[in-house]
Length: 472
Image (cartoon, rainbow, N blue to C red; front, side, top):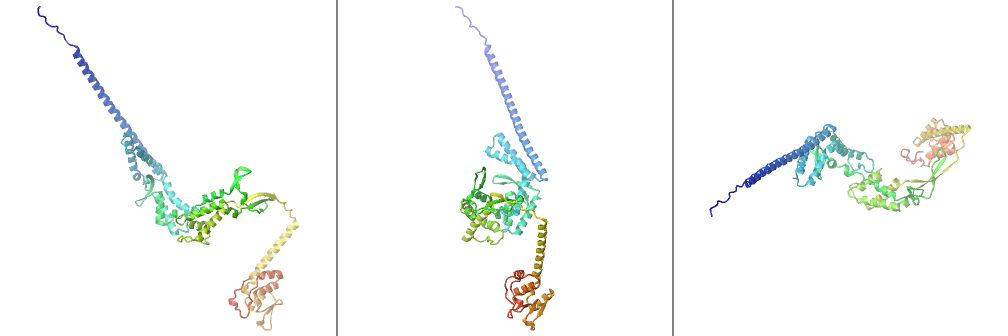
């Protein structure tokens, strides 16, 4: 068998496979590179968008602060507020890029900073309110006002002067109180928020918010409601329970139509022993237990406003004073928070008859006579004053000045006669005055009434210069 060479094969497919594979890998590589580049570009663009947005928010904050400064007379806000604008930007970046360790806390802080422009815009009034509150409290006369009886007047004036200076302050800033941002004025390197203004006033001047008269209005009003029932004639209304009214029916003066209103007054004894009184007593006892001088302040300014029985702020109340306080507290509530008179009906009286001309003339004549008599009485009351009747010489001169007939006894020391009536050293001042009045034309009954009560006579042992009888 002759030798045969094996068949020869040329492999063209493998090379093609490798070429395709290389081309594919290259294409995928290029696609990946392009994708990565695109992703990076998008991320950069996104980051740029985020940062741009944050910058816009920060710019808006600055714009809002500028508007607030302008609207409040050109306040210097940069120093106080710029750090918070930077802080807002940093928080926004942490939240946007997911690097915040406490997103909830950061968002809360952001909200506080975003509110700052509005706070700046309103801050002037907020802080000035602290000054106005002091002034208003000082002006209130009664519950809720300053207890000026417990405050030094000079200190109050000094405090109000200090508060006036706040209004002219142009340096405005922000402070943190209790984890919150609040507006404040900067005065001589110190920051004063609304709360710190109050504290400053109390510490520096020892007045105001700790010395306000307790406002018991709501307690009195709530107690008064216990006396009311639904009106049977109108369920929308409340009326005083009739059992708290007195039995006696009184009436008003007639109006121009002759209508008279019939009414009853409240029965305070019944109310004092009712749930109304019980509630008021409990409120009074509660006020007595309050720390400080609450009860004393209420007593001195509300229950005893005229100062007839002032209580000492430095002394502890006695049991008697506490009992007196409770009783007076109840009385005040019943007198001021419950209507005192309640209409129970009305009636009409006949119109008076028309006055005739003759009656009018008679009345005018009577009025003139009455007026003349009044002037006469006033004249003689003054003329025959007791100081002018101390001795006989005074009586003689006075009688002669009035044109009365005066005759002396043979012994001048024994006395005189005025129009036939004897006046001796022992005649009482009342009798001397009566004799002079009758002698001057006053009728006996009127003279007796004008002479007044009996007084000790000017006897020999009574020195006229030391007489202390009643001048009539």
